[in-house]
Image 1 (cartoon, rainbow over the protein chains, first blue to last red):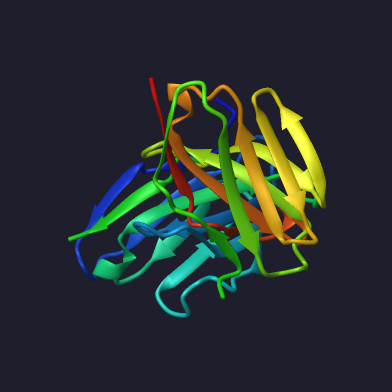
Image 2: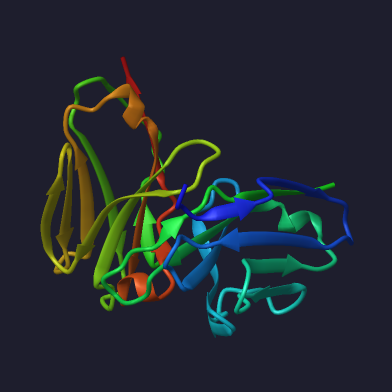
Length: 114
Length: 112
């Protein structure tokens, strides 16, 4: 399967714990995007990364959230000291970059906060 | 005013019907327009990807963009029960190289 791979598919955390979500882009893609989907809401952009660089983090909450896309390995979205409001589906997308190339999505990580 | 408006439905049609799904937007900088299909508990799947105004056809699916009216549509011909899903419109000024702005999605049910 050469698609965007996200893991874990489901993640349960207690308030105050840390959540780490991983995303491996499609083969050949070097651009990664993270989106959040709340119940009854559309997908909302969080952050756009290329290898070792954050290109646009205008959708990221100012505190507790961070993202990275290292030279080797998957992209990581990290949420520290989780709160109930962080419960959502988090989707990763990847593209090969450039206006003519669309973004393809993984099946998401569903984060539940107890 | 939201950047992208999409009627959430739900929309229920009989098998074989022609389905029309629509979005309006306010940002005249949008140049690239996409339709994604999302099944329950799955990620969005790209259906159509268009640039600027005009029509694009792919099998039973036709995407239309009217930039003068800031209005996009997705038509599904000969709808099938397997088309039952939530349909998301998305758009951006620069296509795949930057963040997408999504509508809330329209939930479609095609009844056998």
